[in-house]
Amino acid sequence: MMRERITSTSNVTKERRKKTFVKTLWILLAFVVFLIGLAFLSHLDDLLIKDVSVKGNEILEQEDIKKETFKILSKKRLLVFAGENKLIYSKKNLEESLKKAFPRILSIETSLEGKTIFFTVVERERAHLWCGEEPPTYDDRSLERECYFLDNSGFIFDKSPQFSSGVYFTFYSNIGSENPIGQYILNFDFLKDVESLITGVNDQGFPVHSLVAKADGQYELLFNMATVSRDYPKLLFTSDQTIGEVYNKFMSIVEEDPFRTDFIEKPNRLEYIDARFKNRIFYRFTE
Image 1 (spheres, helix red, strand yellow):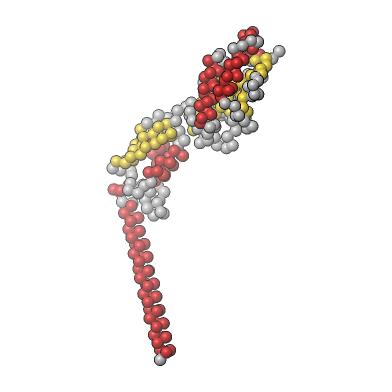
Image 2 (spheres, rainbow, N blue to C red; image 1 turned 90 degrees about the vertical axis):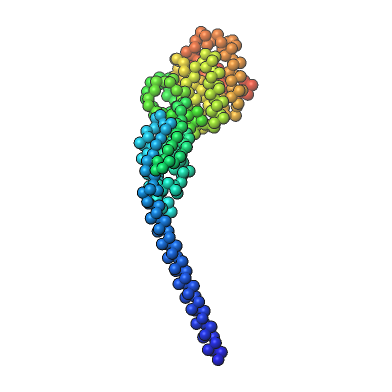
């Protein structure tokens, strides 16, 4: 009797497991069929984005943005759903992908009407140039070099054509990347301070054309002045100093003799003004 009860209980358990297994299979099958149905519906023509309209672009071509948009949207969502479906497309991913593909885009707003997606873009404005790590010598100033545009935040966004020296203020630094596009050259606040220094120095009759940022925190502000030396005359300072401190030191020497008289008599022989040392400033004219 005991064996018969054990056998009977075992059979009931197996039957229940079988039913549970079959039920689970039906649920999975129904879920798969449901997903297939949704995937099919996601590809219906009436639900797909068919066109792109762009406004606010000045340099970027609408056709290029359109092609990149459909390239991004062509990627399936969850492997089976149409990425260009207007109900499920990822607005955030699309905007971020377009900004990555076109670094010139500063901001982008997206809206959808019918089957058309509308972009309102704001392009970065050219503020300065970045031309590599080392500046040319005064003798080599007319040689062509590869340069890139950066905006007023210090963000490098596009390769530039060749310009005559002095058209744009130029930065030189090591940014640690083979592709400079998409990189920042300086901290934003420091960049704003440097721009203030440039304005102040220019106003004192010392036109400047570039800033060299050295790896050890040393900076060289190069004057756009004729010189008998091989290198441009420069103002030297460090990252440990405030820009206000550097400017005050600069002003303390350029308005006083003997520097003032020397500069009037031999402006093309100035080699450097060195503001790197605490409570002291040095300068040198070539003999």
